[in-house]
Image 1 (cartoon, rainbow, N blue to C red):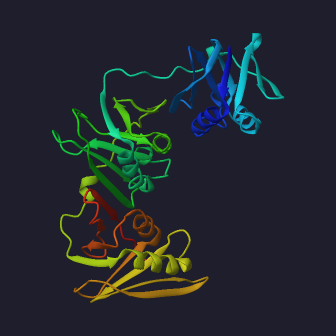
Image 2 (cartoon, rainbow, N blue to C red; image 1 turned 90 degrees about the vertical axis):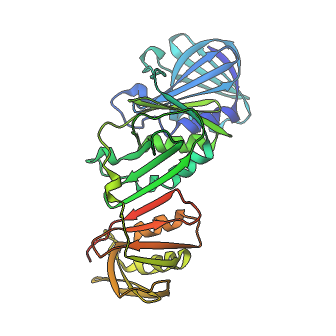
Length: 369
């Protein structure tokens, strides 16, 4: 194999695949990137067996061929090279020569035969959607994914068609303490027979792919894989097994107490008060009274804090405890100047809605303090 390739484009591709390549693994081949030189282009492939990626770059291909090269080592070399045009040549025994200006590197590659084969599309559902829409859906749900490795079916986001026969794509994340739902209308001839769970790492890589893609992406799904294509790169993601919880049962049917609040006012107050909260639980007490909200916390090892603010509320005096971090995270991602907290009693969840984004719903479970 022998190619001449742009440092700028090569570095961009190696950066994109860096999040997928395994750092520590019992399979050394997974720390490598597969490089395949074809007519007028070079294809780069990486995988950890859960998430895979292929990305192609236009290049001058003097001789076709394949080789596997240590991904991190290659990235570090390319990043420090002095000029934009790089020559890469593979000789017998998979020895890789990299030349740029006066800089010459001779590194050891591996046989491409050891590299795992990535799944390909079969029968499944395919839609084309603006990357900005999927990116926004991820931003408004991914923060609520679980990190509990014992509950793998919550370690990702749930994707489903909201209602059969309607062009609404729904994304849901839940961690047992909060629930985030986002709906978006996606035009086109598509049907998702059942919901699927895209794992955390897959969601992170989809977002990274969207950030370097202009316009629409292609999303293909079957029972086992999601394949996402944008510009010159394609992600192949193994879906999570297991049943996603019946999340609709958590959504309150009726709220007896509705409180209108200034988003930034509540957010800043929670940031200040929660400084003194117990690190693990971040518990903060909310006390609602007519036209007023008091947030407070106490820490036996540190002290106590409280802050009052004006709100739109006409009900009785009412106390309830919450994890402050959960409120701060959702208040950071909605765009509204004003929002509402909808609650029942001190054992039922708080529902937050967005006036600017009618497709967004967030639910936070209370905690005992």
